[in-house]
Image 1 (cartoon, rainbow over the protein chains, first blue to last red):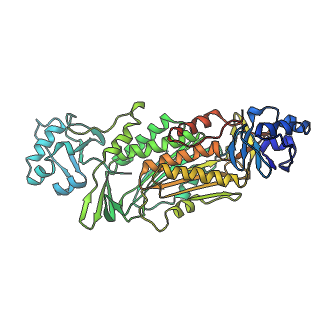
Image 2 (image 1 turned 180 degrees about the vertical axis):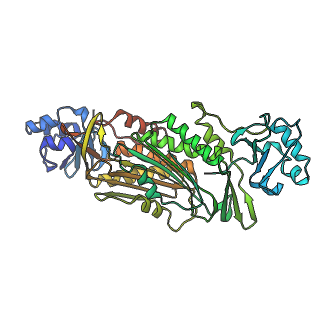
Image 3 (image 1 turned 30 degrees about the horizontal axis):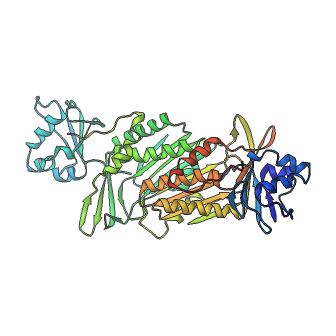
Amino acid sequence: MKILYFAWLRQRVGAGEETVDPPADVRDVAGLIDWLRTRGPNYREALRDTSAIRVAVNQEFANLNAAVAAGDEIALFPPMTGG
Amino acid sequence: MKILYFAWLRQRVGAGEETVDPPADVRDVAGLIDWLRTRGPNYREALRDTSAIRVAVNQEFANLNAAVAAGDEIALFPPMTGG
Amino acid sequence: MTVRVQREDFDVGAEIAALTAGRNDVGGIATFLGLVRDTAGGERISAMTLEHYPGMTEKMLGQIEAEARQRWPLDATLIIHRYGRLQPGDRIVLVATASAHRKAALDSCAFLIDWLKTKAPFWKLEETDAGAQWVAARDSDDAAAARWQAGGGAKPKAAE
Amino acid sequence: MTVRVQREDFDVGAEIAALTAGRNDVGGIATFLGLVRDTAGGERISAMTLEHYPGMTEKMLGQIEAEARQRWPLDATLIIHRYGRLQPGDRIVLVATASAHRKAALDSCAFLIDWLKTKAPFWKLEETDAGAQWVAARDSDDAAAARWQAGGGAKPKAAE
């Protein structure tokens, strides 16, 4: 499973992209975020406020109960500010 | 008094501009148009349908009861189609 | 702050760039560029001649522009309107509005082109296979201008 | 029908001209050009870096453009969005829509820039005297996008 981080999430995590292999009981975005938080203080800090995080699963916007599986591309980022 | 005609009004009257000296009882636009109609068949034809005519007095939009006086610039034209 | 009524063509990119030359406080520029179409109501148009009322045209465009600047916080505005004989594809009119705020730029640009249609003394003569004919004003243009009416400002009245 | 995400600057006049090259059925082109401002909330901005999500950006812009073409009768559309480090006054984004009908061009242009703000994965990092800071999303941008919502289409949801 590929995880992408953008903007201040990328800065706080300390990486823009990583490949992870979460345990089998991680089945949705909420579960994935909970599991990522256990990986270190940088993750805990970056992922502290779930309401500040937007999610895309395989390059489509998704919400916390969207399913995730091996091979997916999950992106975590703050609200967008383009244009 | 200077009279200007535009678009098909100009074509039907046969002139784009003329200086006229209407009688003293011509005091508003409606009176002016009535008087112009007496000046020949081209005027009668051009000015037949008052509802199709827009008016400007001294380069400001005006309606039929707007006052006109010697020295004024009166323009008669169809609804505008710029842009 | 600029109104130009001219026979000559204009350079859209250069005009837009000039609007914000030397300043960095403009967040967005909205523009509308009007072109001559080669058909109208199913008829082929081979050329179009724009007649206008010199003097009053500049005055009305200036009034419309002043009205826009009163309604929205604009950093710069531009209206260029051509007259004379034009071919299909030719540029007719350019309206551009610059503002720190995108909505002000977009709304005022739409306002200017809508109002220009019903308040600026231009008339179009189209050359078709059936001969030359004056373009009739459209009710939809009056309706488009009227939706800005609530905010005030006088609209040209029919002479009836 | 064109979406470009690029580091390089673009030529506004050339892009607008290319939109209608070889055709004479387009009545109007509406455009919105976004620029880097030198201030934000009273603070001086010395530079701005745009980060984006390669792949998803093009996909979302394509979806937004397709949505516009479904809602309005458009002859051509263009979205160019830059990324990388930009200076005040630099061009960021160009949206252009061409239609036989002026209202379709104007409305779809406003729609595209409003939706782009909330649906395209870009993030702005501003360099100020106080250091670099990520621009916060604005409620007014959500509101601007929401006014197009009635006609359908999904909006990105908060992950709460």
